[in-house]
Length: 404
Ligand SMILES: [Zn+2]
Image 1: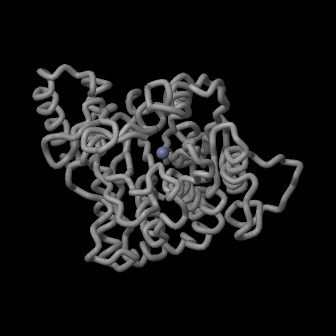
Image 2 (image 1 turned 60 degrees about the horizontal axis):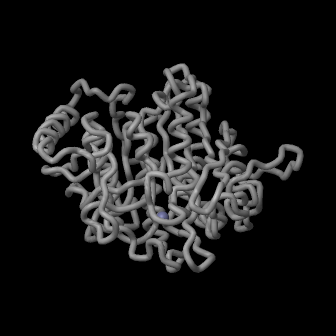
């Protein structure tokens, strides 16, 4: 991804931008200008007013919003006891050992590391499937990590493989799309990218970029195995979908054509694929993109008025878990989810989906972790308690959203 205006790197906006009020203004989400950096300056005050109005409208309790398929906010878990029971579904050891460890390697698109963390196991190889879905002993590398684990969890797994021209020649990219209940009408999508950037020195493992987000998402899938299965059997209208995107990183200088290879391909493909809700893209009620997470003290901001009410749920869940001492983070620690305006826009995998009208929550710390795009972004850069806390907050969020 690349950072916008407030960053010290390359300023640019893409369907998002900081706003005048407590919530940043997302011009694209309001449908006025799909690429805010191209908006003529005289329009900006009008756009800001319109976005502020959209924000007020979207924040109004029970108000009709032009968010299409967004379901109403579910009530929080009925009691503190049920919340504690829910969190017991998580397993920190599984998160760090079984799910994170296999990602801590180079994962360049089309390369052996990429294949190793992605492949679907051959059905005739018949390795015994263990509880929680990884066909390898605890702590051992899982040779068919993403797709293998999710297939073992009985998810519907599809590979979206394609070749695309890059500054380094034609490269094969492969997105992994997993859906808990493919027949459901609507999807809450959690997304991350699993490729690593090619740095001058080999061996970049991208611990926050995005090994840790991938592991968090797999842990959520494992923890919710039972609730998702019961929801599927009950014919629930909404389900969980996971997008493991390839080719987020630029091979050379970030540009419209050298970045977001997997996200651009998948968003276009989903928009063109029929589904009972219209298309696979219109079935996506909300896309939650996780990126650069796993280091200590992330500061995550709301980027889009159309999904600010969902961001507020994250704020509320974090506050509640802290109050109940169900997070490692103690009250003096700054909150992960901040109500202050985002310091600047960030181009990331959400952009091709946002441009097609998908509501987006972009969970990325600003500023970026100091180790971003350096060889220091290793496991030592991760803060396990923060990873576990984020996983807990997201578990509650997903459970509320899907009313599991
Ligand atoms: Zn990166």
